[in-house]
Image (cartoon, rainbow, N blue to C red; front, side, top):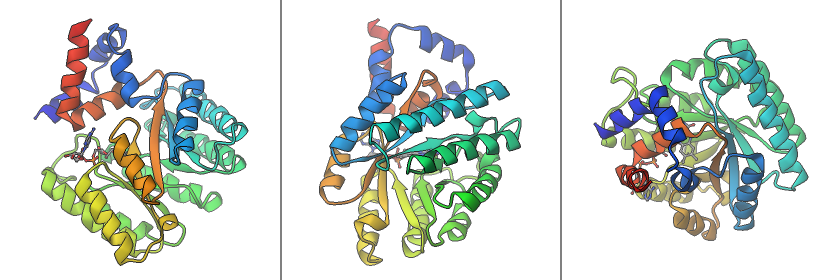
Length: 305
Ligand code: FAD
């Protein structure tokens, strides 16, 4: 119930303006977002890489409405990738891209062309791109664009959401040699017709999908903070005889940093998803929806100001 309310709030532009202009948020936002500028992102990436972690950087922004915004987002990624290369942070750091930030909702071809330019810049910088998964109305389009991008950039990563009923089939389709696939639970509010609604059903689907990916030919990227699912991931790595360079764990910036360090110390590849930029509102709201304890932290900060 609380999750639904917060996810609805993540789509409210009135609330967005109110929250963004409140003088409260710096400390709260900084917990989950690396900062607003590319320099902030490079600094956070440098610190994580020095600690033995890999990184996927996300230039915050989604639901772009004009071609100019889509091009500006592409340019932000291209210059970020050049800066990562110049700072010797590639290949440890890659980028994650939301196609909706590149115009997918109004011009699929435009989004494909911008994504292609980002993949070319990543390839030049010696690193990779992963296409984030968004709400279920975009899944077919995103997977179509992924297929096209992989023709020239085969390392382009996919993201599959365990809460979607279709995802087991998508895992089977994508568990092929060289295929990088991030598996997550899924962060959007989805209808019962397409998505499992209970925590138990989502977790069971995650495990079925994890089994398919870990027993397949591709490169699974297990994106979860859930201690039980991480333990199952570790177990399946042993069972399917996958060495640490044949799969990875992924966690979000600011979430369970002690677990990130523990997994890295165990010898696993751990990639931290690092968002930065000024358009942090929908991202932050999805994080708050995942964990009511974070909401308490947020409200306390609001009421203090
Ligand atoms: P949850 O069900 O949120 O939590 C399960 C358990 O994990 C909790 O009970 C608790 O024990 C522990 N836990 C969780 N958070 C904390 C915390 N803050 N502190 C301490 N313990 C905690 N979603 C998309 O829809 N598309 C994407 O492209 C996408 N990319 C992602 C990339 C990465 C690297 C990650 C980690 C997540 C991504 N997500 C994405 C979000 C994902 O779908 C989930 O919404 C999010 O990860 C929360 O699910 P969870 O698996 O962590 O488990």
